[in-house]
Length: 385
Ligand SMILES: Cc1ncc(COP(=O)(O)O)c(C=O)c1O
Image (cartoon, rainbow, N blue to C red; front, top):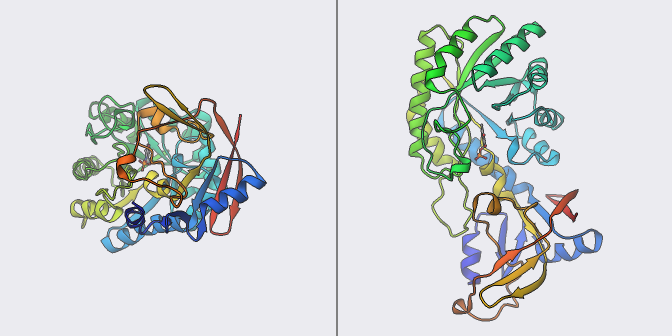
């Protein structure tokens, strides 16, 4: 079992060595003992090296593709200031979904011209803030277009905008994280596009610089990305013919899946994603924007918890820990798989046949309250409420 584990996590900054879990060169069990003396449990450990590697995987593939490109980080995936500073210093832009995210992105060093403000429910205050700062905005609907036009006119400024389109493409992921279907609340559907186009064409305060789609998250099927590129290219051509010569970028969104199960399954890499995009868009006069979140940040952290006790009923065994859905919401929110492992296998006896299915639970919620950074990795502490 140990040998398999060590093999599966090869290439990750979180790996087992001789049955013990490490983050980079730090033994997590040792770290837990140190942390507990100073603060509390549970806590997150982030690997800066893993974060930089994930960004560099995208950058390398984009550079090699020959596509004109820009990589934006989707701030909603994790908006911790320290992490954002690392990401901004690597030259990425940022996609944000609120006034607060725009502010924190700027605080972390992202230049406003490389910040995109996206969302289907922007307030007038946030829209004005974005325009004043020089951020780009996505137009998500007819009313959103009207609000952006009104704000730009009021401020005597030109708003640089992308039209977020709803392509009605099914990304084959959980319905809660599907965003590009007719049933989704995001993007302009084909029937509404002429009205939005007419509106923005009538205003000198708006420059349409691109088109945008985001199909959803945890995408494994790259065929859906190909369909989206075809759709976006077709719309770009149509709109350029209608006089939108200013359209110069295509934002393909984020959504790439990650290896949650740690079973060595074939999860598409950024290189495979970009090869797919390249097949469709190479040679076209467009800049490609990618805005991943999960595939940049998801594999950079673990949550270290402690077992408080074990509780059994005739049909179930519950392992009660000090971690809760406050720290890991995905399983409760949409039945997502969350990988759980021991920090140290060296004292474990028995073999595969002795495995039992357990429920790992915590009834009360915790609150994240502290952030602590140690050299190449960061530790985020959480405190029980
Ligand atoms: C518009 C947009 N772009 C990018 C992302 C990032 O997606 P992911 O974290 O799956 O890469 C999201 C996430 O919901 C999004 O809504």
